[in-house]
Image (cartoon, rainbow, N blue to C red; front, side, top):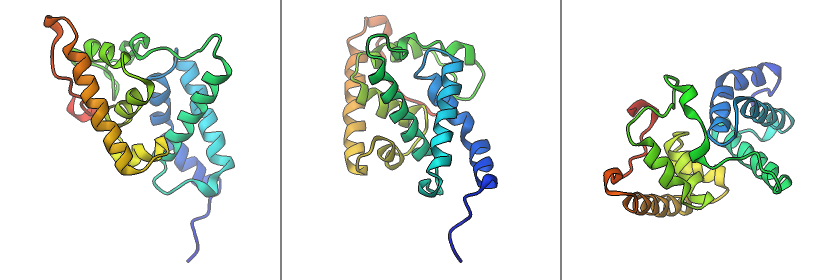
Length: 182
């Protein structure tokens, strides 16, 4: 039996299953919902063009495409980037939706996260917000699983240190919860 047919039916199923995940990924990194939807559309254009390369477990691959598209956008618009630091993203408009920031202290975690370098922020977002495993995050970042595990460990440590540097009223050990834990 040969590989599955990558036709319009396959693409429609992929799109229906993963579109919302890619839009949420964009919402956490871009200035508005329209930009996030546009990013998702670009990701799926790439997925269609490169459909023979899309693995069966496609979400990490799609996140990797989105990450590279955002990096390309940022590089092409360095004078006036559309990307905003995570502390400026207004996720309150998503209250009640999966992945919405509804826990106490989220602003403190987001502020501490913004002090970290981009790679630390990204590994923490991929594991904490996008709910990827370390090996899936490694695929998105283009590194090995052990490298991603070390990066995640170090990023968590730096996040804890950044949280400890906050005023006493806000000192808590950060916990990046999955959507089900919220």
